[in-house]
Image (cartoon, rainbow, N blue to C red; front, side, top):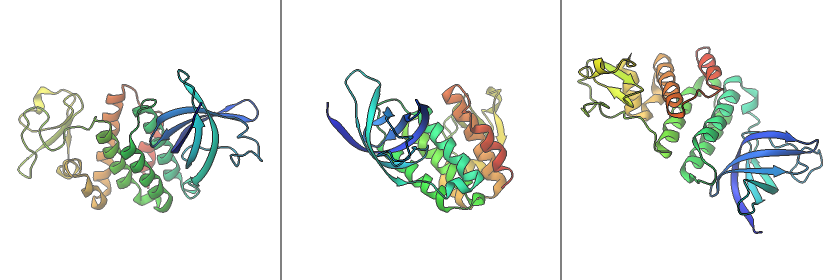
Length: 249
């Protein structure tokens, strides 16, 4: 049974017995994996103690063919997210990120680009004040949806394919249509929502969120959360906390 070396982000941890943990990692080259870390809860374990969600590190694990749960043999943390845990919005965004990565990825299906973007976002959470985090969260969510092939149509009307431009007098977003909807098509979609032109611009060119005003960011994030809930067919359990906190910062 060969040992596999990889880099991973801890997505979930569950206590297993008095001394061990069951862990879910998103690994860069191996995809999502489940492993048991025997003895990790001991203070003097070879893992350096309990492994927390959103910790990033180099890992070595073994996995027998046909088994879903591997065995973690080494873990060398390279990022503890200590500053994230001191900030209320940051820590909830980190847990939200871990949940999204877990929900949107499949076991043993690697997404190296998504892994790299998640690393960048967690580092941003570590170094950025709570009131400056929301644009980076939106950018990460766009990257996530793009990497998994579930991005909404944001450069054209999702129905008639008319190109989005400054000539649009009204803008709408329809989850069932899968993106932006123009004024001529909106009546065909009962779930459509009118959105500000600035929000549509942010959806069309995500880099604009960095300089967007807070009301635009809030509307953009609310729409993304609704869209991701539709794609997943269930609401992420940490979504409500994000919705509530982003309106207070």
